[in-house]
Length: 176
Image 1 (tube, rainbow, N blue to C red):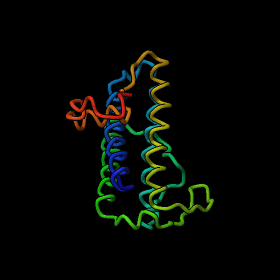
Image 2: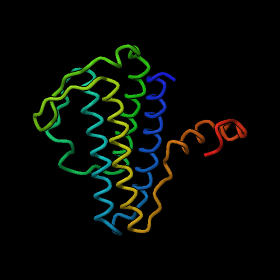
Image 3: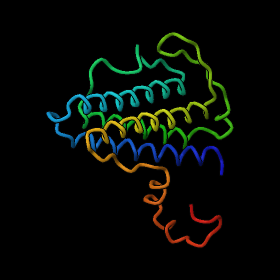
């Protein structure tokens, strides 16, 4: 499997997981567990902002953010739309970027002024891992208020996206 194919699958899973989690957050009662709900929305917004920042780095343009989050938390429905847009951008980007360019380094400046340099592939991997880390953090927060977080593992995503995988029993290696 090529790096591009793997990244595409991981970014598709991220888009699905972001959507599932923001939908869950939108369904929470704003008056109940308001602190946890607000913190979870702030973390999802942080995922969104960092995704926008790295998209700008990949495009070689200024991102316009002074921080890795915005001063105010958006409403969940607006955040869901914004996340879907940036997640779609990453999937479209992978359709257009030549595979050999994934190894090309990109120099950039972090929002705190520090300089950075990562390959395009590393930047895309960072976006996936960064979002996954914070969604896991939100899942722990939800569990703490007795709300079941979405079951958003990569395996679940693959089997929902490609149900025929369930029919491939008996193949090696043994079931995990």
